Length: 337
Image (cartoon, rainbow, N blue to C red; front, side):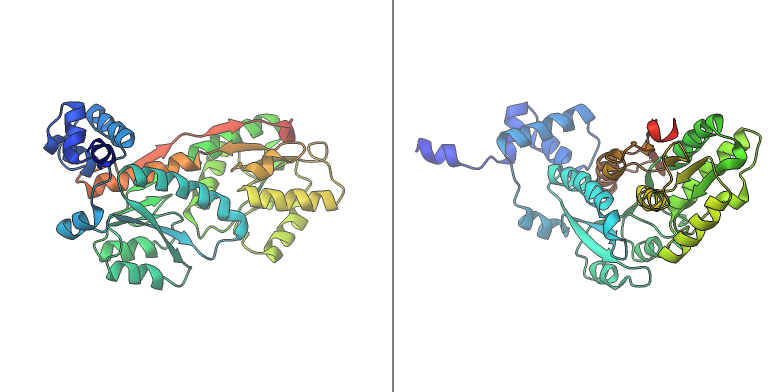
């Protein structure tokens, strides 16, 4: 008899009894519906972990007409080098979903192919969607909005009904550029930026230009290269850029930075003796380079977790702010000293 009791799965009433709460209060904390104190909700989730409580999700989904799945749109046309960001971001989402008894489902898309996302929406396989890399045309957001699918966007969005969770790229890039302007002549500070089809690069460019405006100067247009989305464009841009003999080059992301560092090494140029290098996005690639590269640090796990938390809040009836910006850190390293 005791063995049976020991093996008995905890029920909703067990959670309520352990915390001295009503079953309805515990139920609201789990579902996210109704008004409930954040402190109470946190206590409920802690107790759930301790007792290993798992509701009957199949019965629950049928009765409430929910899937308890969150769709995560991942660009399939991204390079393998970009994978670590999406994987790290997805880790934060998965952890947050797991606490709320939801699952994160990956949905692959390409620039001109949203068929998988369309199929998931039409078949109602998810309750909401997180868009991880919005395009400049807002096509993904429009598809979701037209079909009445709740969604959160990680990054900037041109779609008027988008709720945004993002790292503060504009101010981060602005602050790092301002620091570099104090160390280098304004007309010898260069920029190498990826495709402006993606809103994150537009934010980075805005931050870069804003720093010059703050300093009462202007960027040397002969040293500003945007839309670098192919090997050919990269090679041409670097060739022209180096002819202008920049004192410092800022790269839009870690992948562009690694390619530039390899090119400089082939040309026999040393960092920072011949040219200083900085990046608007940090990664393990840049940590291990010698000398380490001055970079902006953003917490991708926190970004994913925040996006998932806000989407689950929407599904539970909570209306989040239109925009949530997460902080950044500037790491000054030997590549700009």
